[in-house]
Image 1: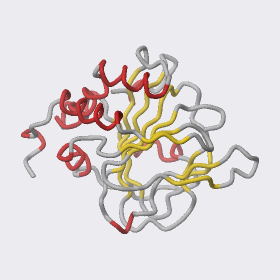
Image 2 (image 1 turned 45 degrees about the vertical axis):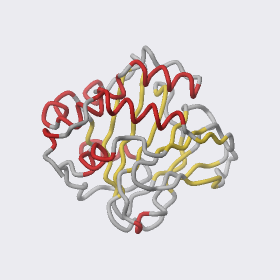
Image 3 (image 1 turned 90 degrees about the horizontal axis):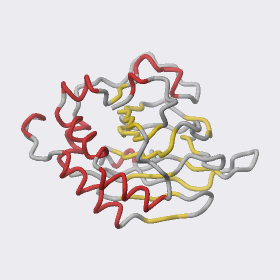
Image 4 (image 1 turned 180 degrees about the horizontal axis):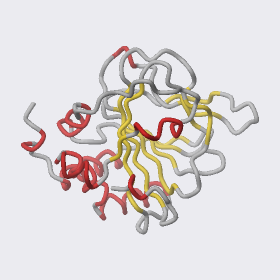
Amino acid sequence: MPADGDLAYGGTDVASALLASLEQAERADQPFAHWLLEDALPARVAAAIAALPFDPPTGARFDGRRETNNSSRVYVSPEVQARFPVCRKLADGFRDPRVIAALEVLTGARLAAGRLRIEYCQDVDGFWLEPHVDIPVKLFTLLIYLSDDPALADAGTDIYDASPEHRPAGRADYALNRGLIFIPGRDTWHGFTPRPIHGVRKSIIVNYVTDAWRATEELA
């Protein structure tokens, strides 16, 4: 694969891939409205993101919440975009007005005034996420998975119903370049039920957030 700086894909090509994927998105309405994507990014872009030289976290404490390990989380910040051109290309794709407009049409969310936040995740064995809903300042959530390792076939995001027990109601397929979209709300319960992770569960989490987002260093 060529070096990151030699990638032939610019933000427009990322946008084109996203637009094509959104046109084919599969909608499900139970237990809440969500959309499943395939081929969300250009293949070489997805591969280059997965190959970024960030080590998986060591010494992490797994208690069902990502924020417990905030100090080791990686975001596609302006500094990271300056270091790694593929990260700039990725952010430019999600900043493209055509992509924002398509996401609004698909989901009904109002995103034009939102601020972009992209997290690069590398989850290892022991990681789990309790059933939760995203905080109200998140306007939109998209997860894109970045590995084709068959050992990770069961590593997709779990979705739950809104009962007090939060019963399991489905699981997104974890496969290279597949994605899950939902609009955060009071019923959008999701997480990662404790189970072994056979390898490194790589993904990106894309959010558009309101101006009330306090951790501005996380923004793209």
